[in-house]
Length: 81
Figure 1: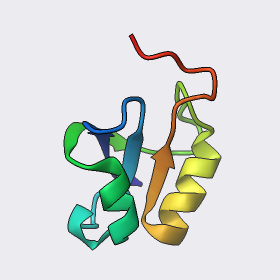
Figure 2 (figure 1 turned 45 degrees about the vertical axis):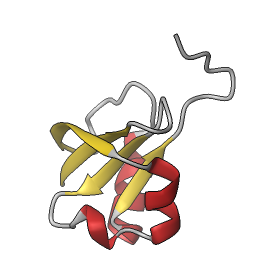
Figure 3 (figure 1 turned 30 degrees about the horizontal axis):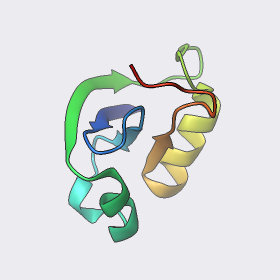
Figure 4 (figure 1 turned 90 degrees about the vertical axis):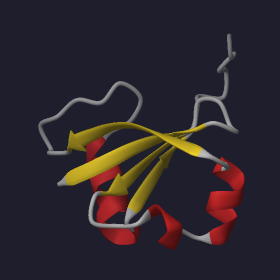
C-alpha cells in the first residue's frame, strides 16, 4: 500500500500515515486541529514484511485500510530535544 507520511509542526513527535489516494483535507476536523500544520516527510510503500522504527506495520496497515490513516504518537516517556 502506498502511503504518504506527514509530521505535525504543532505536536512534536506526531506522524500521520495517510493512504496516498486520500486528500489530507478529508481527515476528521478534530484530527486536523490536533496536528495543526503538517509537513510531508516521505512517500512510503507499506507491506507486511516492512519494518517501521516506531510502529507495528500490521497495525499501521490495518488502520490505514480501515480509516484511511494511522496516527503515530511519541512514546509516553518521550522527551523533545
